[in-house]
Image 1 (cartoon, one colour):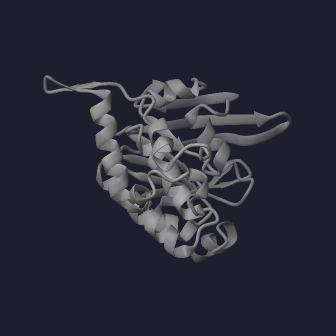
Image 2 (cartoon, helix red, strand yellow):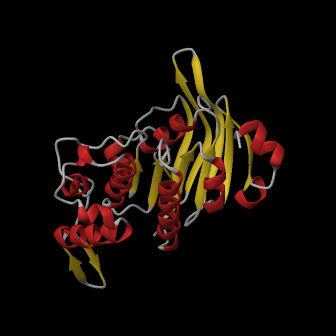
Length: 247
């Protein structure tokens, strides 16, 4: 089942600097929720606090009502939460396919309707699904991942996260540094992933493209939620888009 995420009064400190200041938000099951804002607004800190990569000073993170605040990243991954990080973090010495298989490390065999689906079968099924989303990765499956273009590496980073079969997908700046046509392709694929019932939390600087696919959005400024609302309403607010989102 897709997962609901709740953040309650999150505070994250970097020494004397408060990166997040009393941030609360909800990511409803099966929705795309966008976190928008300028550089330094606290977007990446927020998503890293959910994945366990950054520790929270106070507040709570709840996944379907269960508290996961400051859990280790591998324990959060075991709860079907996967992150595609900013900067892609491609494993340069491995092929495209090997990078994807790394994403399947936490998979276990499953029992559905009395039938056991092995880890190997699940891995093969997910690999097929990722190659359907990103046909270029199938073409380049035996190629060294470091030789891919920026757009292809971003597709690989998202594909690797999908190999963990997440119910909640965390995306950090998936459009960063990419050509507009590639960005459009990636956002179309995110819409397909949502149609399959997944929940997506996306951190982005490309406000306009993100709001076109999101259900709800939060705008951060200096670590605080400055605005929130339905994406279809925020995208029509010209003053907001100009003042806070640089559009």
